[in-house]
Length: 227
Image (cartoon, rainbow, N blue to C red; front, side, top):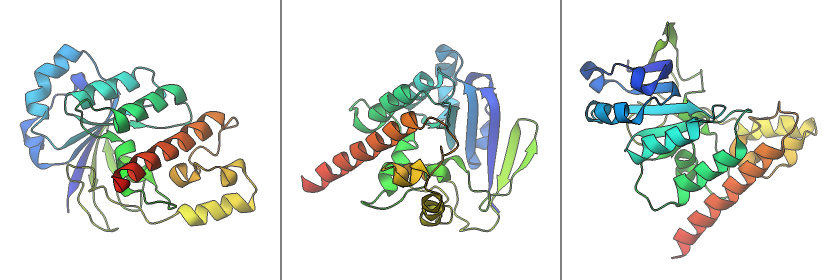
């Protein structure tokens, strides 16, 4: 049974990376980046590891941190929640999908772009291991080992096309929102968010963001298909 090492609530540069982690997928939910000069000193070892860095969208420094990690070749992502800065998140989305500056994939934008098909639903929760039916996780302080238990049994390899996928839930969830006549049921961006921000009283930010994300992604993919 394959395991994932999960580290939480630490700055990236405060983590003591180990050579023995090379054979284990590593996911870091970081509280921050730390000093860039320290990160650069750590890069030779980090580049040997199968590691993904995720930062919290509620922390204003996270957006720059994700860009820095990605520009240095680190596989990075931002965990989108109701406290996100929607304007900064939109800028990060454009950086991830449109810039010609070399950088590593930025999640969840890369995952959605790779898996989305026109007029279909995408659950990017798979990127952040949100599906507890696929993973059984036990905790030791700020470190977690997550053995795969059941599900599709897919390994969490390096590369954005190998995320373990959760069971389809979008259409059923949409029906539940529709029956309750919630604003989410009429939102075009539903195909991406699937009601993840339904608890928010003011949905203007998430609505504008997800709709722009959807339109940008489709315009890029359509343009490539017609060239």
